[in-house]
Image (tube, rainbow, N blue to C red; front, top):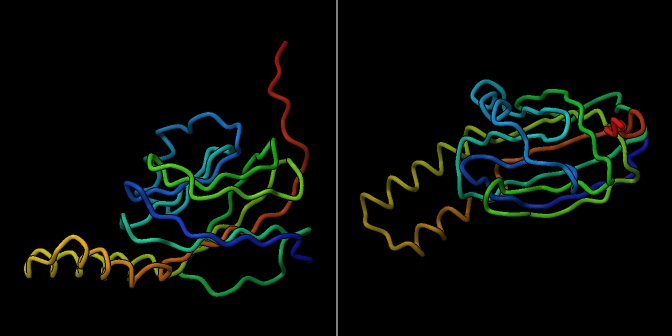
Length: 174
């Protein structure tokens, strides 16, 4: 197994959601968003949605592209496997309705198998909630609250290990 590319960025969950999708993909389905109550990461083949337990604290997102599935995986609190079609080869990491956190150029367009894993999800949500509770009780300023929340940035992490399966599906039905 060889890692062909690795990209790291930070995204802020908006409405507790971060999404990954092809640059030309249409809006995902709301049915997939409903799955986030049961699954940490859900997808419809064209969009992957991350269901964080908090909003407003930056999470680290790592995207690694391999030539084959890795034989071993790093430790994680949980993981799942999905499929994602990226017909343009440009993978967008979006902060749901807040906008784009970054774009990643994949080695080539296609359909990829994706192993999504995560760490620090629950502890970050508990800590953010405690900070917000203290901020209200002690009447912190907005700036002081933001500064305290920013100390948690990156404690919640998501990793997407991807490997190429085949060419993109041809959606043309003439």
